Structure formats: structure tokens, C-alpha cells
Image 1: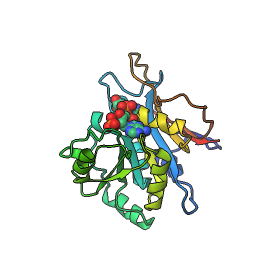
Image 2 (image 1 turned 90 degrees about the vertical axis):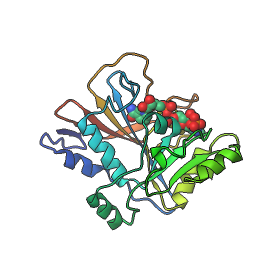
Image 3 (image 1 turned 120 degrees about the vertical axis):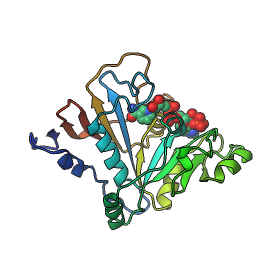
Image 4 (image 1 turned 45 degrees about the vertical axis):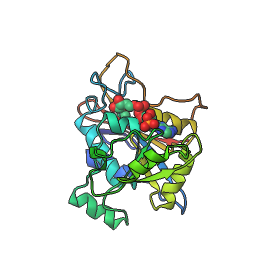
Length: 248
Ligand SMILES: NC(=O)c1ccc[n+]([C@@H]2O[C@H](COP(=O)([O-])OP(=O)(O)OC[C@H]3O[C@@H](n4cnc5c(N)ncnc54)[C@H](OP(=O)(O)O)[C@@H]3O)[C@@H](O)[C@H]2O)c1
């Protein structure tokens, strides 16, 4: 591993050294911090040939993924990713649970799924863990669907026709979950970009070109570009690039 940023560059850095820089900033009361974590190929694809992101990921990327979960109060994910990637409950080792409890956090990050349609199978692995999942939808969602999903999750309704993502983040902060991690996918991230809600991006670049028709990491309504500045950059021995970008 070589750490290039923050300076001075450290050619001897270990992955642990690099991960030590990923702590969330100190947040004043009521403020949240939304970090997105995405992996892409050199040509910007967010899925491999099998249509999932796992086939793009590298061992170093997986360690970052788990470390970011260990730090977050809540993990936000679009329903498409939860379905495609067959999301299950967030897990944490005893060490992670102890570190979280030392920081005053719940033992595991709370999973938050954003869904307009509520087309979520209550018997799926998504709802099989010990922690209650939060499902966010809009006020126009059908009562039938709200009732069905409400049997296995806490359903939060924000926005009239469309989910209000700003209200969603405020709601989570009010619930004591201000350190937020968005794991995608591209549609949810595109909406968060359009609403100017992304504070930080953790972007893993894997050294492959995949071509094909895979999407890029954020797609959605046209939006004013958001400016970011690099805060960390490291090159792993296998060519994986770990980067961290903060809203400038
Ligand atoms: N490379 C990476 O780091 C990475 C990360 C995550 C995902 N992925 C890949 O991305 C693909 C999935 O892409 P996707 O765009 O379908 O993902 P997505 O954003 O996870 O899911 C889209 C769905 O999420 C819900 N949703 C998203 N934004 C919403 C909003 N503002 N309001 C209400 N509901 C909202 C809707 O669910 P309903 O349909 O239920 O209404 C929508 O159809 C998968 O192939 C996955 O492997 C890659």
C-alpha cells in the first residue's frame, strides 16, 4: 500500500493506517454527514459482467466496505441494490461491536432501504436479522404495501409523491443516526446528488476495463455539478485505488 494523500506521502502505509483516516467528522447537534461508498472500474462501470458490484470488488475494497459499515450509524441503500445484491442484515464482529458501543453507537449499523414501490419481499433475507430495518417511502405509497412491509420493518413516509431525501436524512439524525453511509445504487446516489446531499465520496477504482453497458455510479435528474476535493488517496499492491473526496 502507498498512501499519497494526505501528505506527506507514505510509501510504507498499511491498510490499517489508511483506514484510520476514515472516521466521521465531529458533528454538531442536529447535523448529519452523508458519505457514499462506491466501487467502479477504470471505465466507470459500477457492475461487472454478471450485473453485480461484487464481481468488480477486490479484497482491499471489501475491507473498506466493512470498515465504513463499522463506523456508520445507518447504511442507506436503494431498493434496487437491496434486491439485485440480495442484501441481508448488517453483521459486526465482537471487536466492532465493542468499538461501536465505546463510541455510544448501536452494536450494528441500522439498514435503511429507500423504495418508492415498496416491492420488497417480507420473507427475504433483508428482514431476517435481529435489528429492525427502516424502509423509507413516500406518503403516496399504498396502505396495503405499507402494512405488509410494516410487519417486518419500521416504515417511514416522507414527501408526497416522491420520497424527500432531505427529510429522510433529517429524520435519521433526529433518531440518533447522524453518521450516514450510502451504498448506492446509482439511482439513489443520482437523486442525492440532485438534492445536493452528498458530503463525501469514498470511491474505490479497480484496475480493469469492463466495457459493456454497465451504468456509472450516479444517474438521475439533471443537476448542477457538485464540487469535491480529494482528502485521501492510496494505491494498494494489487492496483486498487482507494480515494476519499469531500464536498468543497
Ligand atoms: N459499484 C457499486 O459500488 C454499486 C453500489 C450499489 C449498487 N450497484 C449496482 O447498481 C445496480 C442497481 O442500480 P439501481 O440504480 O437500480 O439502484 P438503486 O438506486 O439501489 O435502486 C433503485 C430503486 O431504489 C428505489 N429508489 C432509489 N432512489 C429513490 C428515491 N429517491 N425515492 C424513492 N425510491 C428510490 C426505487 O425502488 P422501488 O423500485 O422499490 O420503488 C428504485 O427503483 C445493481 O446492479 C448493483 O449491483 C453498484
